[in-house]
Length: 456
Ligand SMILES: [Zn+2]
Image 1 (cartoon, rainbow, N blue to C red):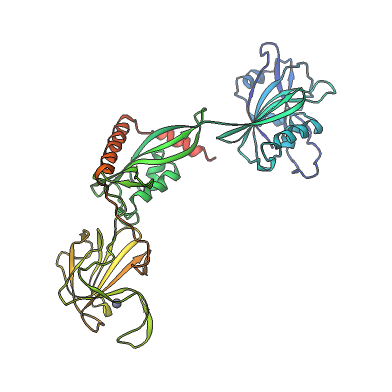
Image 2 (cartoon, rainbow, N blue to C red):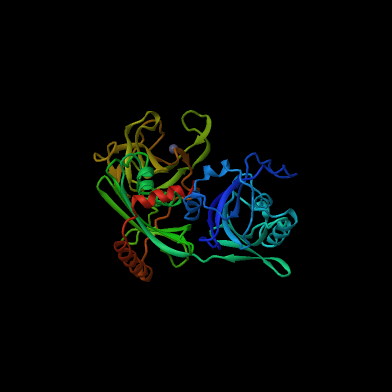
């Protein structure tokens, strides 16, 4: 049934009062949902019913609506206004008929509305404000005005004019507002962010910003913290219509603080940069060795030892034994030691998606042990011919989401560093964001609760 969520009077409240009556279920109409519940109807009566004052003050109980079966007697010919929330199964026709309109009148209103809004786009949760002249005797109710709000950005207004119904669309302007939210992670980032009032789309963006630096599966621990400043786009009524970008995001993981700022570069590309102007996107070296040539690329080949044709899941660089091998990017060592046919082997995890592996080494650097942090271009070991190898070379693999990929063909992250005038512009914007952030109060948990309710 249709939910009446507000009722406000153009009523002389002191003189007239309202009772709410249940009308019998209207006959099912062809092409409409069969309504099984009595529609809440509102008729105007001079009454001293004590429920009336509660109704007028807005504290009425919907459950009480169905039990009263008073007849309609209408003594008032003033239009009243009502706000209806569209519910599942409602059609515009059913809603208007519920308000006492006759079919022809309702049809005319819907036809006018169809000029600017497809009635099939009516969805549960949308609201319809109406000004209605109630039925008088044998005369059906008249819809004087209706305002449908299909989404927070526009209104569809239908007005009964002399020549009949006319409809127009009104777009609503949005105002941007910066919001600061922060929290300490107890069980998960998701829960902490939700409790701090971070909407889900913004949380997704937050995870993206840090995906090159933080492995959310493995690294984030209770006690780690996050702060974020993002844009909320509000309607004139203060409803959140949309979310803009994260302007600043900070995470403290294991005592290590990382803060990134949104910046649009000269080519119009938006990315996040640290305070020195270094992009969050860390480049992985395609060639983690100097002066080497590729002796065998990624792809099908006849294996030099087994003789079988098989997929070569890495890139081989021929180089003299002892040539230094660099870490392709910052990361954590996942494996360092002997690994079957790979011989002396190192694997480094760079972020939640990317890892690199290095095989057939003659020696592994002593600092490179499982769990150790390495930085890009740090020497991790030396070329050799250990394991199944026909001669000194580095076998190098890039793993994306656990799969070996060809480092020469995949779109590896590029690590842009801002310089010159662009860096100066970034630093000005960064200072503005810092000032704005410091001036904001963090969103409270109460606001967080309201956000959750938005989806109900
Ligand atoms: Zn190889």
